[in-house]
Every structure is written in C-alpha cells, then in structure tokens.
Amino acid sequence: MAKILAVVSSGYAQADHNFVTGYWAKELFMPLVYLEEAGHVVDIASPDGNKPVVDPVSLENQNDPDGVYNDMYNSGRADKTKRILNVPAREYDAVYIVGGHGAMFDLVRDENLRTIINIIHEHGGIIAAIGHGVAPLLFTKTFEGKGILDGLEVTGYPEEREPENVKPLLPFSLEQELSKRARYKADPDKSAVAIWGSRQILTARDAASAKLFSLELVDKVPGLAD
Image (cartoon, rainbow, N blue to C red):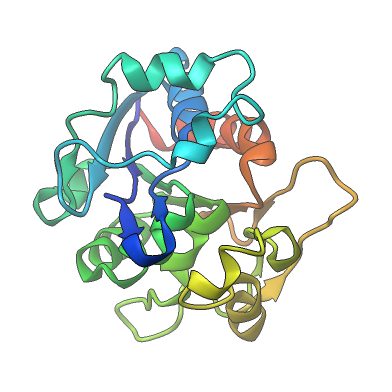
C-alpha cells in the first residue's frame, strides 16, 4: 500500500467576466477511484483547505454524461481537504496534481506545493499532473535550482482546445510555456496521451487521458510501496 496526495485548486472567480473555475472533477475522481481500488490511500489537499471549488463545466452533461462525477462530488469525498501548508510531504509516495483552469491561478504560484513536490521527488516518489495541473511544475525548481521539467518530454492541455472566451482570462498559455522549458507533445490524433518524462514524472494531456493516466499511476505506484 502506498500513500498518495491528490492536489486540487481551491477555486478562482472573475466576477466581471462571469468566470468561475476550480478543479476538473474527472481528473480528481477517476485516478482516486483506480488508486483506492488498488489498495492505496489517497488524501486530497488544496491551498485553502476545506471544500474546494469544482469547475462547474466539468459536471455538465457533455463532460459527465452518466453522472458518475456528480455523484462523487455530491458524496462529499472532496469536501474536507488538507491545507497544502500543513501537508507532511515525507509521508507520501506520490503526488498527482489535478487540472481544471483553477490550477492556473492558485496552484501555479503556491510555494508550499513546490516544496511538497521537491520533497517527494527527492525521496524517489512519483510526481504526476494532468491537464492544467501540469502548470505548477513549470515553475518548480529542484533544491539544486534546476527546473523539474527542464528538457523532459511532457504534455498538458493544448492551446488549440482552450475555449475562446477563456483564453484572454488565463495568466499564460500552458502549451507555450511548456514548450519553452521542455519537449511538449499534444499528439492531437491520439484519444489519450500520458507521458513519462522520467521514471518519476508523469504528465497527461487532458480529461480524455484520465483513464490512461490512472492506469499508469496504478502500474507504477506499487513499486514504491512495501
């Protein structure tokens, strides 16, 4: 059994543009289910702690046609998150950072999250991120001062898929920034993309890649656990 930390945005809003975002439900709950069914323990953390904001679009019918993630959200499974500041990083074998546009606003600049990532990485654990959840890795440097993604093959949410009404509200283009630091791949012809940039770092493109991302984590995590 391994102990895994899932990290989600606490949420973000721009009232002037009627824009409310947070974490993407499928990107949290699908890996969580796969990991827990494999016998691992998953804790959830966010910058503010307590109940984070889910991106309402992720619960709409086109993104959750069977209501699976609505049910998990309404069950309260993610209502009581740990505050990132208080997370004992050395207790965890892996961390996965959940996407949704919220990650571009709060997780991306969270220094406490960067510290957690570095501690888990230094101890040989897995660092995984999906969709916009890759954004915090852009600005994470190792304790030696090297960018954690520098020169690696990575993926993340593609610019061409960003909604036109959301693009001007984002602080930066994830694809463009990843391309400056790493070898970015979107593989648009593939239905799902998850890439091991190193034996410890896994990135996935989007919610459509959540199952592949989950399976990759389940396959790798047991090697870390006793």
